[in-house]
Image (cartoon, rainbow, N blue to C red; front, side):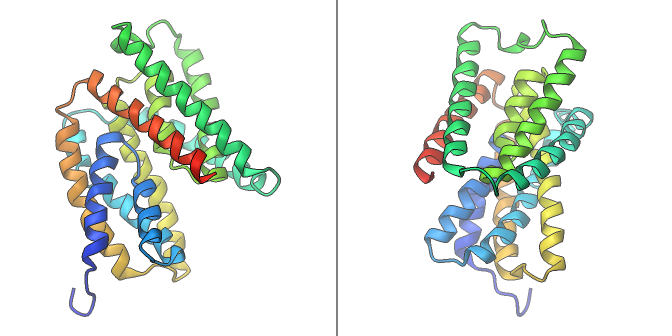
Length: 254
């Protein structure tokens, strides 16, 4: 590390983002990017460094989820392949449509998902939410939803985890902790692809990237340790509240 100083501010922010990312199955970019930009960091340096830190969030504590048998690799990778199609459509559509209206629509979707999850908890049927859906229908709806996930992610800059967890949970029939663990793995895979692209272009600030990654790895381990101890009901409540907060943030930023 000689000649490559570590910036303590990104390390601290990375710890917070890594903790939330592991606890909720999201990347943590929704914390890192706006905070660092508000503190005066160049957004062109923040974005690739944030992606590298998301890989750190995925790696930090993933072994804990894996050893607990909570990561459903087969289901996750199958949906991730479909997400790529949605992302390509989203990139082209972003040039044609008004983003503010789409952000408002996304906020409504997030509010609906959160309300649906909380209602399911009240019905005391959280563990059996997908039992009535046939395998064929679940796969079809899951792939359609994954296209939408990739589309909205590319269109309005929302990380895949915020929609990926509800898709894995509500449609694919995984319990909440398994959905969060699987999403954590997939968010890291997606971010790694983006990091490679920025590295090839020489656009990654190594000091900022390493500082954030150190924080997210530590925060990710702690978040995973907390996450595996939470009940599915508690995980669902926490994630539903997170969706409500994010819907408000998207509306305000839009």
